[in-house]
Amino acid sequence: MLKSGEHFEPLGSGIEVIVSRENHFSTDTILLADFAAPKKHENVIELGTGCGTISLLWCRNTPPRHITAVDIQEQAADMLRRSTAHNKLDEYITVINKDLNDLKGEVVFGSFDMCAMNPPYKIGGGGIVNPESAKQIARHETMCTLDDITKTAAKLLRFGGRFCICQRPERLADVLMSMRNAGIEPKKMRLVQQRKSKAPKLFLAEGRRGGSSGGMVVMPTLFIENDNGSLSEEMTAIYGDYKENYL
Image (tube, rainbow, N blue to C red; front, side, top):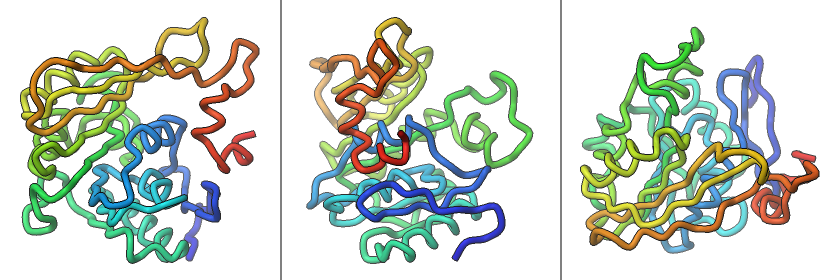
C-alpha cells in the first residue's frame, strides 16, 4: 500500500490519507474542506486534489453522493487511489489523472452541485520558483491559471452550483474578477487570521454559477488561534478528531 517516502496521516473518524514530502497538506486544506463542505445528496468535484485530503475529509462523517477528484500529477492521483482503497471509499470517490483544462469526455459538464479547489497561490513567474516539480505545480500557476480554474468550474457546475476557493488576500481582486468573468457570481467571503494581532493570511470565497450580481456576504473573520497562542474554539471544532493529531 505505501511506497518509499510515504506514510499515513490520520484525519479523524478512522480516515487516513497517504502523504509524502512532495504531496501533503496544510491548515489551508482543512479550512477549505470545511468551508466547502458538501451536503449528503450532492455530486461534487475537487480540482487539483493533490494527495486527496479535501475529498477524504468530506467522507469523514457523512459523505456526499459522489466525489470526483482531479489532479494532473500521476503520483498524486495514485496516492489518492490507494488512500481511497485503504479507507474503503471507492464507491464515493472517483480519481481522474488529467489536466483540468482537458476534462471533456471524462466528466459530464453541468452535472456538479459544487466544485472546489485549493489553487496555486503564486502567479506564474512570480516569487521564488520551487525546483521540485510537484511543489512548483502546487504553489505556482505553471500548469493552470486562475482563469483556467474558474472557466473549468463554470463548465462543470449546474446552474446555481457553488464554486469554492481559498487564496492569499493579495489576490482577492483577481479571484473575484475571474469568477465574475466566468459567469460565477461571488456570494460569500471569509478572511482567515492566525490571531487578532496578525493581518489576514487567507480568504475563502464562494460563488454561484449564473447567480445574480450583488449581495455578497462577508462572514466574520476566522481566527486560528487565541491571543495566547492556543487553538481557537472554532478552529478546534473545524479540526474535529484531527485536532488530536494537531495537538
